[in-house]
Image (tube, rainbow, N blue to C red):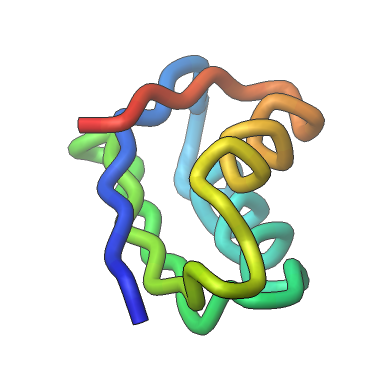
Length: 70
């Protein structure tokens, strides 16, 4: 298991953060996602044999947000 820390841009409320978490946790290989609206950060625990950081970033982008690896 690997942890990925991201800076999330373009969130407007805590519902945005929850939506990101739900979308990420639906991805094969993501064990957990914890997004903090106040800090604009997300911590994702994932199996690096099943999913890459690039795929995680692409998923976030597809939901309308911008993410950068911290």
